[in-house]
Image (cartoon, rainbow, N blue to C red; front, side):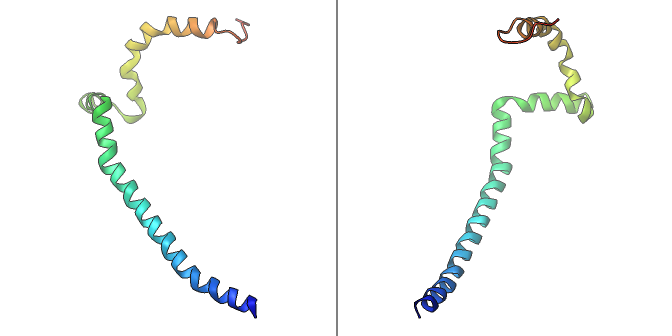
Amino acid sequence: MRTLKKASLQRKSSKPNRLNRLSLLVLGLVLLYFFVVVGLPFLSQLSGFSEAHQVIIDENIEAGAWFYIFVEQMREIEPRVRHTLQYTPGTNKSD
């Protein structure tokens, strides 16, 4: 008798639980949409990525080759990076 009451209570309580889960899913999707539409453009402006993006558009650089605009900057940094990789403690020095 008690198991029948528990089963009937579980069935009744599952509908609000399902509705609660569905409402949380919809709320999460709406928040995600607003983050993508409002938050990411704001962060892009804040971090200065929009200027780099505008250079890519102005110079008609294809998406797969966008990193080539930074080649000159990498030439200046490359000796320091090589030095750091070569003399980092705990790495194999089998050069």
